Image (spheres, rainbow, N blue to C red):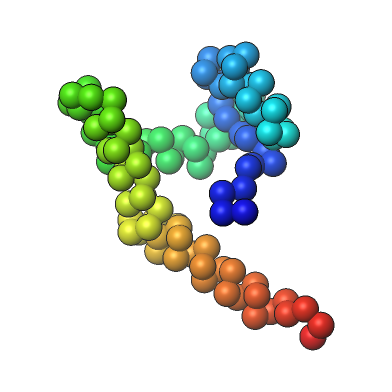
Length: 113
C-alpha cells in the first residue's frame, strides 16, 4: 500500500481533533486515538515543531484568491518539506532518510539468511 493508514493518530487537545466527525473518521479506519495531556505541549514536540515550520514555509494563507490555489500551495509546501528541505535532526530530507533506513534494514534482515 503506497499510503498506509496510521495505526495511531497522536495530537494535542485542539477542538478540531476532538470533533465528532474527526474522531469517527479515525475510528472508521481503525486508528487508535492518542492525545497529549492538557497543558503539556512538550508531549507533542514533533507535531508542534512541524506546524511551526509549516506555517512559516506556507506563509499567509489569506493571500490566495481561491481554495484551489491554497490547496496547491499546501501540497507544494508538503512536497518540499518531505523531499528537499534538510531537517536538522536527520541532516537530510525525510524521504532520503526513509529510503536510506529501508536499504539498511533490507540488507540486514534478508529472508532465509
